Length: 245
Length: 245
DNA sequence: CTCGAAAGTTAACGGTGTTCACAACTGCTG
DNA sequence: CAGCAGTTGTGAACACCGTTAACTTTCGAG
Image 1 (cartoon, chains in turn red, green, purple, brown):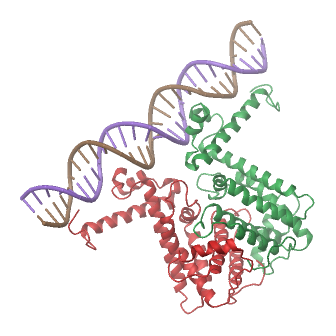
Image 2: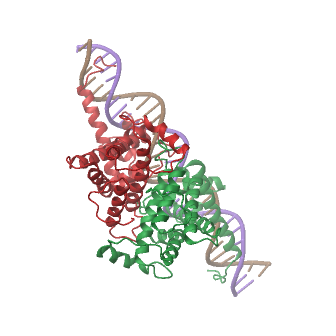
Image 3: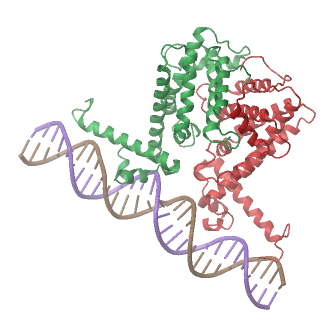
């Protein structure tokens, strides 16, 4: 172990970071250009002008590499969502949430393979780690959405579902402090989950092409859904229609 | 070519069908017991006491085998949904649709790996056929849901979204006769797609474990969503709450 | 300058999908 | 019944995959 182990930006350390990043970059390029099945240790190494075992100096194996790639993509998505939010600094949380959701769809459509890697797989597919990684990196992105919902909640426009039975409330309590920062009202978590399933369903179905047969342009459906979600959250501004959907 | 080529149930033909079915059965067992990555030509052959190249007498390759397995699972799901519907023959379409949706969730939770194979992957992942197969087999199941929605529509309780712009309507027209049987009203297709995205989102998020961190029992959320969907469809019977969600 | 850690190589093992040449079996036809 | 053709299955082989082990090279810190 070098005596300058704690050094922030040692030369050695820096080129290593670059290598780590290039591996991920190459893996992502393969994912985008050739599909999920093509992001392989040997292919990445080949692409980088080295041999597969060399990659083991950087990642413990194929699984860990994919995991790292997933993490970085979660981060990128989180940054994109936050940027969409900050693009309208003076807007209320409703408008900002709307823009964030639109950015999610935009990102997913622009990066369908990446979206698939992040959201199309079971979180535990017998190979991903128990959940800590999925939590940390996955919730840098989820936190952006949740935070806006909390702010909407603070505005007082959200009215929670009435019939929350006891068991339901109990498990929500469990999650409360699990979220960093302020204590999140239980009902907000419920609303968050409900809205997320709608958002996820709409975007996933579109990105995965499940309704290619029916819709050549699913954007109107998405905007309608967005209206509906924001109405459910009590936001009245920026509404584009007043249908149930 | 044998002279009895057209024979319905020739001996030869029958044992072949059995072999085809056993291959699928074995593949499914591997999928369930060992995960998606384990459903491999060699593993299936090994499990059946033969060698991998022998399977090529039955399926053109790994892709085709997976495709066939997917098709059969779609069929099984369609049968399960239809059975749930027919379990309440005297009930109205609203109640029947409710039971069908519940059955979808039940089936997905009981067969998560199969559900993942059917719905977690992009329909065209650079390896599935263009779409004809996904259409035919995928819509024996979707048709069950659509048919109930059409019946609800005939009941007159469904009110379509008002703001359907022209382009939106145009593409819906395209789909109209693409569906077998009676001409389906355009708005019904819209409602169908909208409801399907909600249903899919709720079930998929639960099955894939995206919200394991937050919910130990997602059933209340599902029931709330179901209430909401059926309300949107104009069905008033069997409602369990009156919240937005 | 030295030396030890890090980076990268080659070789190898077992696994995969896939192809091809070949053997065995089965059942129809002359 | 004999023979023949189609069907079914095998074994060997190829290329690719993840992974491990032993080895060489590189390079920075003391």
